[in-house]
Amino acid sequence: MGAANPDKPESAESLAGIPPEWLEEFEAAARRPLKLRFQYSFIHTYKPVLDDAPYRSFDTMEDYRRWCEENLPDWLGYGRV
Amino acid sequence: MGAFEYRQAQEIRDALRRHGVRYLFIGKSGAVLLGFPDTTQDADLFVERNPENCRALVSALRELSFPLTDEEVGEIERGKDFVQLRSGPFDLDLVFAPDGIERFEDAWRRHVEVEGFPVCHLDDIIASKAATHRQKDLESLPRLRSFREYWVKRQGFQ
Image (cartoon, rainbow over all chains, first blue to last red; front, side, top):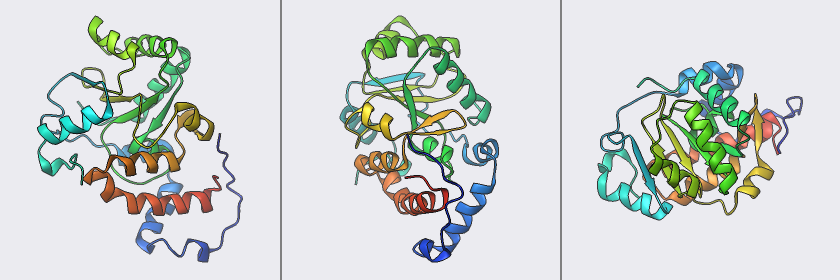
């Protein structure tokens, strides 16, 4: 299992590959308690077709991916590229 | 149906622990638990596929008030690759064979605990998203990979 080491020192240069606006967002998120991160992250938007059945199951992930491509609107982004 | 709440994640964690279910948060919900700031809709659980674990999962889901028919119970106990639940108190996706991860045991060995939530390592979350080849996942990967760099270096996860 992974372990946190919050005291591990890192120079700003070592994070230089991260776009500044993303780094700012990561730092801001790290300062928020988990409960607040949840509040900001989980939103509910109705997804047509996908949300219209109370239960679905697929024998294989390939079946699921194919079903998504054949049944969901393209704009939902579930199609493979 | 409202947005998935922290309280509901706690209910999942506590119920699955009581029933001894081996599982991991995966997908965007797992990344959020690790600190990734982004939006998502539902929780995805990567569940170890074996009969005992799947039976324990069904008991936990019933305790959480998911109304499962006998047929649905049979399918979950068989561990179909993917099960989507939209009839319970919150939306939940059960993944028994995520793309990009060979075995549950491998992911379990690398997993991270966040406030008692068992979460896939970010490398596994990234691997599973990359392996889907879905447009929505590929679009989120550059930012997720940057977050991985931040998470490893700043938070000290290995």
